[in-house]
Structure formats: C-alpha cells, structure tokens
Amino acid sequence: MEYLSVKNWDKLQHYKDRNPSWIKLYTVLLDDDDFESLPDNSKLHLVLLWLLAARRGNKLPNDEAKLTKKLPIYGQVSLQPLIDGGWLVPYDSKMVRSCYNREEKRREEKTLFSKPKKCHRTGCMKMGTTYDHDDTGLIYWMCDDHKKKGAKV
Image 1 (cartoon, rainbow, N blue to C red):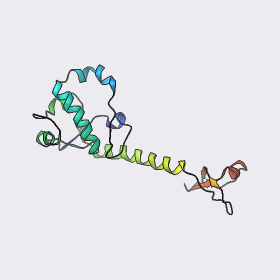
Image 2 (image 1 turned 60 degrees about the vertical axis):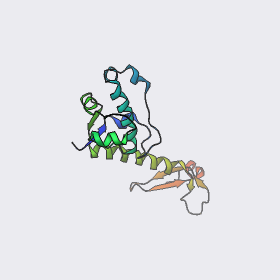
Image 3 (image 1 turned 135 degrees about the vertical axis):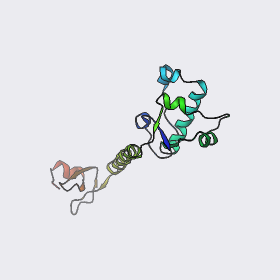
Image 4 (image 1 turned 120 degrees about the horizontal axis):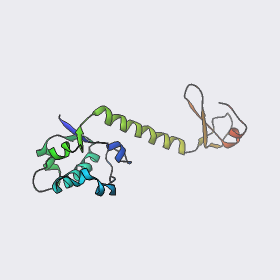
C-alpha cells in the first residue's frame, strides 16, 4: 500500500476544496473511545495528518520517514496505531475522485443558479432569477414575468 487516506474524510469535512485553509475538528472526538485509547503522541499525529490530508486531497504517503519530515514534530510518526485503529485506510483514488466530483458539481450548480441571467425570451431585457430546462438538459433563464405567465421553454 503506497498511500493512505483518512477514513470517512468526505463525511467529516464540509469544506471540500483541494487546499482548504481549515478543517473541522469535532468536539465529540473527546468522547470517542477509539480516539481515547490511542497513545498521546498518535492523537497529535492524527490531527496533524488530518491537516496534511486536507492539503493533499486526502492522499498521504504510507512512509513514516516522509511524513515525519512533513509534520512539525520531534520524533518519529508511527502510522501503525492509526492504521490498526481504523483512522487511516488504504488510499482509493476512485472514492476520493467521486467525492471531489460531487462537491465540484454542487459548487458549480450553486454558482450557476444563484446569479441572475438575462431572460432567454426574445426581446425581453429583464434579468431572470428562475430557470427551466427542456428534455435535452439545456438550461433557460426566465424573468419572473414570463415565469408567472407560464411561458414554456
């Protein structure tokens, strides 16, 4: 196994950009028996690996020497307790890619549909805040006046 990833990363993080400036760290972690049973240094390593995973698209090298150089720690990173505890799992590029693809599509749709566009009806110069689409999947913007009149695409 060349690379590792954080288990359930897509469910744990709302901010899905490739290089986010912050990550979520849930307070329920303090009540998690699995987390509590980790050695103290592994707890710190896990949190630092979460930060690194956020920067690297949840793709971490399965190499303790490389990770030790990357993390601001004294001593050696020990991955085995984190792997044994199920915190780190083998990297699956298909799973990570589908997670980011879903997020990118959602972000594009949010941007696309949140901005008013010129109404597609001929001669209408009003801005459309609602949209409709035909069976081809093309999106048409309509102003509120045309939408109220029941104008079809």
